[in-house]
Image (cartoon, rainbow over all chains, first blue to last red; front, top):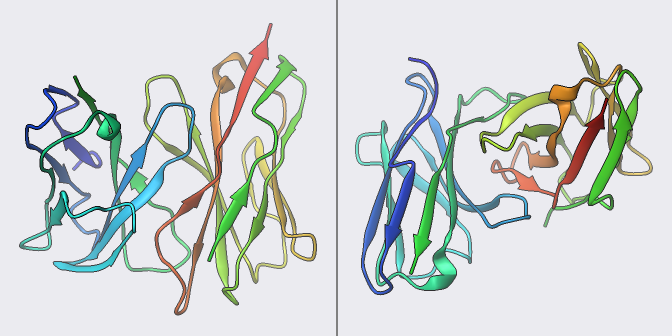
Length: 114
Length: 116
């Protein structure tokens, strides 16, 4: 296992279409996070899983967004009826449950809504 | 609520010199962690250094050190002997512990450019 893996790396979609991104965390990591990063800004938290339980969701996560982590391993983030404002880099990170430890990030999925 | 403020949108430094990137924070969590990440133009977030709120000593990792001043709520990153490869965006971030928020809250970042 070489790190957090995200797929696809790039996605171009038409406004109104649905998209789904996948994140494979580091295998022994219980915690998984999704962030969104727009150009020139720091990442903003979207949602957090511990194992399969979704423990926290940001107010940024509108009802068009849904995330799952069905078996406590990989996670998916779906955006329904995409809007141009959804264009961003979507970052996934994972960490063990041990406190005082950093999160490891994937390379992100860059979404462009045209 | 947690908030991270990075007031330097961009910084220049000459190769081999030291540079300090500023970070101030605000939180109601009694214990928390402070992190610095580097994001090169390729986009991945690279962890640099961590400081726990109860750590007595300032954290160091190679050429990186964190100047932690708890009373002032600041956690500045010091990079010694800058290298051309240090040119990147740098983000300060924090997370809560105990009952606090686990996810990271990031600042807006500082773009560092190292000049030969």
